[in-house]
Length: 322
Ligand SMILES: Nc1ncnc2c1ncn2[C@@H]1O[C@H](COP(=O)(O)OP(=O)(O)OP(=O)(O)O)[C@@H](O)[C@H]1O
Ligand SMILES: [Mg+2]
Image 1 (cartoon, protein in one colour):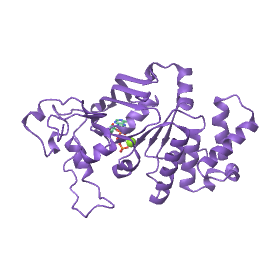
Image 2 (cartoon, protein in one colour; image 1 turned 60 degrees about the vertical axis):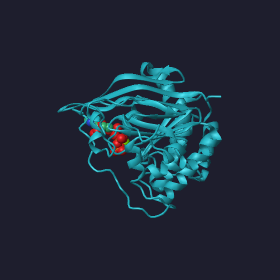
Image 3 (cartoon, rainbow, N blue to C red; image 1 turned 90 degrees about the horizontal axis):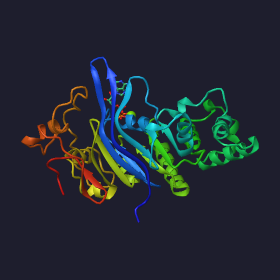
């Protein structure tokens, strides 16, 4: 049986107003995340990953505007939510952990109080009950409950980031968005945190939207991955299939840009060139200039993001398979 769809993003378009004109940061992106699924969003810097995350949480600021599309959470369009619906949605239904979140903890309030405040703001429980919950939350991320009285500066960066993760889980959301949650940490700490996130997901059953440009990390832990390029989604597939049979030349290039830990030593290829200007994007496929499989029509015709297999979608006129 198909698993319930928690989040469905349809044809999302987001622009930033800049001095030179509108930056088309996200152009017609669609994807679904199922209950309990670990969904990864990858792509090089500036391709629109964070813009999607902030759009889902309705946290885009200032110069940004959503110019089209829908974001449905359990069938309700988040973009139409009023103040109260948004308040409930933001912590109780979904939450977000950012790369620099550990630096956003309030420096003059103990982590215990910050955890309790998150609980008390949303649930009618006693302070005693909230303290117990805060202790349990810290235990979830392997931090001793004695640390409830600690101030953020008394904890290491990895511990502070784990506190933020605990906070994101405080109200048992159905969806947790992680935007580069461990990029600022060393690899051992990063590995431990990710392992814990996976364990917690399995225990608590929330779905994850995980954003990173670290594709190898993503391949190890996600159920399904979507690859973005210049504000568009170019491929989405279950991890195994994406690794073995990438259909988009950009995905194939990305997979060959990272060293394999266990496989034979091979010369890494990388992808030459750079992302097109998103204010006046060229016609046709945005990847055409850098593509090894490019043909004449690629600079004229925009490829559709179409289904090529079970859970496998690709936007390319000359796919490597399917
Ligand atoms: N406030 C802003 N004003 C103008 N352009 C912006 C603004 N914020 C982001 N952009 C542009 O929107 C595009 C998408 O940015 P976004 O931050 O979503 O990318 P990203 O994929 O998260 O990148 P990274 O991996 O570096 O975090 C980029 O081209 C960026 O320059
Ligand atoms: Mg980002």
